[in-house]
Structure formats: C-alpha cells, structure tokens
Length: 138
Length: 147
Image (cartoon, rainbow over all chains, first blue to last red; front, side, top):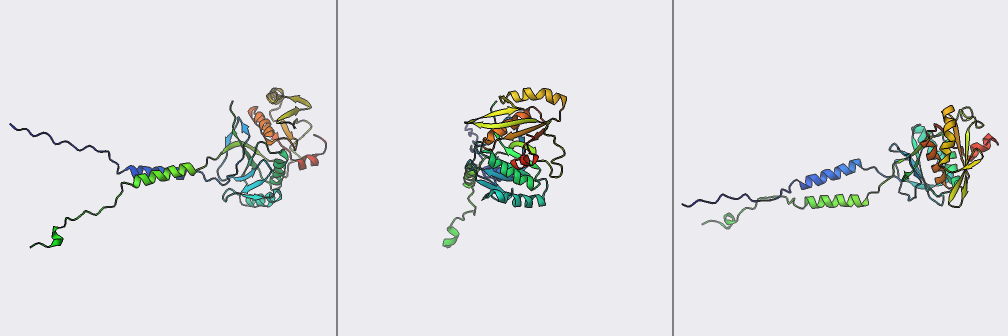
C-alpha cells in the first residue's frame, strides 16, 4: 500500500507587518518627544527636591562666562544682552501673565549674573520662575 | 499559430515592501541618535508681586542666610552664625514650629557661585520652608541696611 506523506506546511516568519510596527514606533516617539528650544551646554547645579516644570516655558540660559541665551519657549534661543531681557520678558508677560521662566544656569556661574537676570524679570512683573537642576545623589 | 505575446507569462504587479521595515528602523535609530535629552525638572519659586513687595516682608524678623564664596566651596552665615549647610534646617525647625510662615531670606554674595544658592534653596525646600525670599541687589539697596 502506498501512503502519501502529509504535505508539510512551509515555515516562515511573517514580516509584512514589521514596517507598520516600526512606523508606529516613529509616530509614538515624535508625539512624545519634547522639542528643545535651547541647546546651550551648561553643567546644571544639583538638588534633592525637583518638580516637573510646565512645558512651553521661556528659557534663560546662562553659561559659566555670563553669556545669556534667551528663548520665549517657542523659538530657538539666541544670545542677548542682560538689559534686553526686560523688554522680551515684558512682551511675553503681556500675552500670558502666568508664563513660567526657566533659569538654566551653570552651577559655577557667579551669582551676580543670576541677580541681574532676576532683577530684570522682577521689573517685568514675572511671577513664576524655576531653576533647572539635576538630581542630586543622596 | 500562437503569437509571441501569448507565450510570455504575465508577472503579477507588486510594490516591493520587504525593505520598508529596514527603512523605518533606520529612521528610528537616526531619531534616537540625534535627539537630545532635555532636563525638565527643577526648583520652582515665585517672585513677589510688584505692589506688595514692601508690605508682606518684615526683614527684621526673617532668618537671614548670607552666602559667601570660599574657593570652590561656600560659607553659609545664618543670622550671624557660620554653619554647615546640613545644620541650617536643624537651626530653622524650632523657629518654623513657632511660626510656619517664617520668612527666610537668601542673600548670596555677588561673587558666590550659583550652585551654593541652589544648595541653600534646596535645603530650605527640604525643610518645608514656605516663604523663601531671594532679594536682588537693587531690592536690597532699596531696603537699606536692615540686612
């Protein structure tokens, strides 16, 4: 008697949906990614207490030599003089009086640079300020 | 007699998609390499309102922390007493128990590094100090010699 061997199913890995998965990942990363308006490199001071700062805050970056970079939270940051913070901040405050201002300053910068920035912000009636810090080990 | 055209086997039309996944993963890798991790956490505080700057603070009763630079470190002088950063909260706790709204003024020297001010501010936040004030040089000169 001649019994036919059963037909073997061809084994393969389905790869048709691989592209869909990859594009889904791309879309996910693009949606969750926050757009960085300021790329100034500073070594931030550390602190144990840290709170999440609302997105879209204006950024004032101060490098160790006292150079000030300013961004209104939407456009990329640009170098400005300390005296120009007041009109820029006042303009932002005229649109949104609760706008957050981030101070992204190098930990080794002399305090007088921070002081003049704070003074300008105070004169522009800014209320909400946040100092960016890194997590302190401890 | 059949024509040459009939003899040719017809290829089914298709768009080659086998490399699509490679392209997509390449894009993912590219975005991951070029993206910058931005810090979005820090210490929050609020500046006083312009109109009541002078009313809601009585500097005589406030705790005064002066920060002076000393090489790479800082000297913290709390109410005329030099103390270590960790001792500030020990000094403040009895005062805060009596008056939870006690004002604490941080007064960094213009030459002191910024991180010392952040350290002091962080220390006060850990001690749940509600009213922290960091007057600017202009404000201090307006207040006079009370500090």
